[in-house]
Image (spheres, chains in turn brown, blue):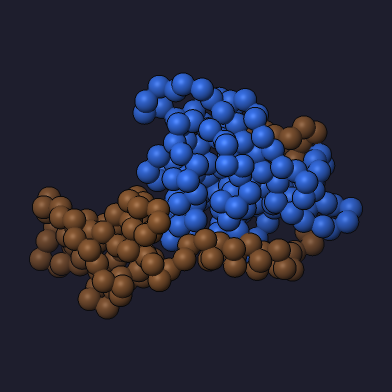
Length: 107
Length: 133
């Protein structure tokens, strides 16, 4: 196991993308709401190691990446999407219920 | 706490929208999240104003379970970033992330997987009432 450190990363690191240096960024937990700082795990490829990589923890400030703006855009796109006409196999219930009781339609 | 977002479509009009539900559980045993099928909890809030049940087709759903005491602001942070962490797997896709148990089902593909995940999470982020929990 590699020693885990907490160090700030520069803005070239992003979750879901592979850094040009080869590091993969995995979001772990939010550390600060207003500054949007996250604890992230870095997966750094290293063929000489068993498992092919070493891991490190770091702090990543996502000030340039607005997650809320992203989901708002997803909401907008989804609202305007043209959906297939076929009917799915689930339907909602007679009373307001969550997904744990969705009935399946008969085939 | 169990919160759920469902995209539903009326079979008669074709109109679709996202309905939301929130349940609370009270004190829970640490390390044992109350999963919906075993213990959905008590329904404390819902917003089905987009398309009233019943009988609508369910196109997709996002279920999130955590402990009642987890602050809603913290839950919102995880949900807003969810599409950067959850990867397509089985349908539904299930994962545990931080204090959250998450299940996402795309029943009728049409909206891209990641876009719909972001959209359902966005409805929970934007529309859940502040006092919940």
